[in-house]
Amino acid sequence: MTHPTSNQASAVREFGDADAAVPVLLARVYEVAPPPERARMLTHLMQPLGLLSLVAVANGVFASLRLRNPSAPLSLRFEDTLRISAADVMALAEHAQQVSVETVDALAQWLTATPVLASSAAAMLLVRLLKRRSLRRHRSIGSKH
Image (tube, rainbow, N blue to C red; front, side, top):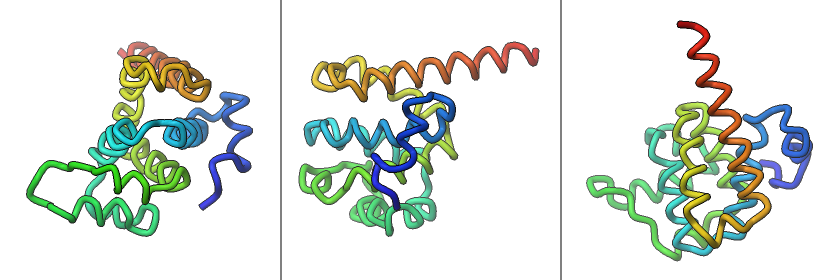
């Protein structure tokens, strides 16, 4: 797995490839987020993924979190967020948007409602990108009808 500041960073600057830029920006937001917000982000990104997908992502670190108490709703702890790197978040976001781009796009509302994150440059850029991508998708759907 590449580090979030590697070659995919060019996609962030250019906005040319939103699908590549979103995971990079989410990883950057994760790096500056306090543990409770990190846990919310991870929980949200894990929602659309089944256990097999979670096993395939980041050497299974997310599957181990899910399997800790499989019959209960997912609940992450402070310690869990310390084990997850920005590169792991980037991999999780890549998989999550393949399964449900709407789930990832919904993070824009969360980012704007969280003052500590809303002031981050990466978060502001991410919100802009998510809103633009969502608008484009809705316009595309509308033009098909």
